[in-house]
Length: 532
Image (cartoon, rainbow, N blue to C red; front, top):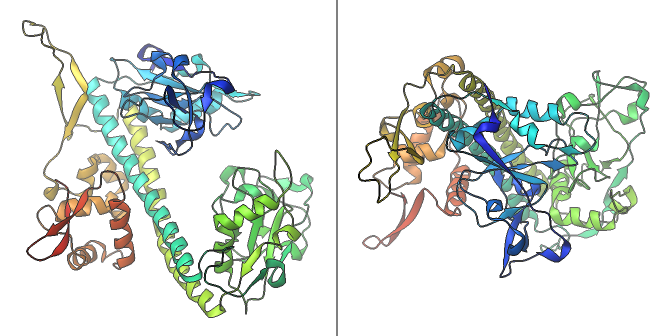
């Protein structure tokens, strides 16, 4: 293990005044990235500001192989989060961020893989522990201990871990697709909340529904364990849904009134905004007689002959509804609302049979989502084992063969000494995809397969499936269904045309999809084929 210091350069972000920035693109200005642009290991470029080029030094431009990290934040969870820049970007970054720029003695993607490990996260949590301002110093990064293997092994390790991370990303995207599908079904059946474009009967929410305050439980009975979980705004996802807080879960051991013990599928909304976007977010209680109705949470009480909890959940989760709740709230730093304010929100009233039809669709989708979330947990366990073994030097890397190009220039013709490797052009050899298993495709070592089983037990990978079976023929639903059932018969998973369509449409929306639409003049038909 060696200090990272000798293998990197750290570059601080730029400080600027209000006169140096604009909110939209303009000649003479550069995009400026901040910590909020680093999301789940990717760059989100939807919320940018632009800074004068004149105040940006050359080394503060983002280069290929850079790792952008959040160096300062009010939240410990944000400090240290990072994104790997696969290409140079004509952009810079703010003073609350920094660039880690690996030098030629280490493979940049290998450093990035190390930054995605528990070892890195534990180091970050340790160095900022107890600090009033969560801030990473230069020494905090320099002092990181990282194992240094031969460059060729670094390439193999980075390849393996990147592939494993891609699997996890794909599974998260599949889960997000299910959420998007449910939202689209809601809008298709009921139309747009607030606008009520389908002209349902409508009135203020309080005419149909009451919002009940929670109880102010005494803090002296708060505990790290117990029979009853005390729900807090921290248990709410910003987009709606229950969030398990893990070790931070709060329990209550005092006396409890039965009026504040919640039942499965009770619907609550957050009435305070402890995090951006949280105000008005709904959850359905996961189980019976386990969760407590705390203050600052509103219990939605309604007649089940008139309304369905799944319909109401997705009504409250709609951005337009949350926007109304937010605008009616009070407070500057932290926004708060009240039952009476929520009861003033306009609510449409579709027939209960239609609501129940929607609920059945949601339940089926939620079953699939739970299966995917279970497989996501298994993949995350696999990645943790893979990364731990990788950085201990315990992986068998012999199956991976590395090819690379040597650097040269027009003046190199007479050189006799070995030329340096151009690590930007390294690739890992694979056998033809038609002969691969999914483990081969992602380069999972044999010892990891023996310990955790094949990753085909945890995930169905659409991209691999298409590339393996449709190299020389069009992608048609009947052939896809037949092959899908052969893959998934033993797991009891039926083919879903809805899921198939979602995968196709989502891929075609991408900038570089792995298949394309081809018009066949002789048949006057459009075929779906893989990009070559």
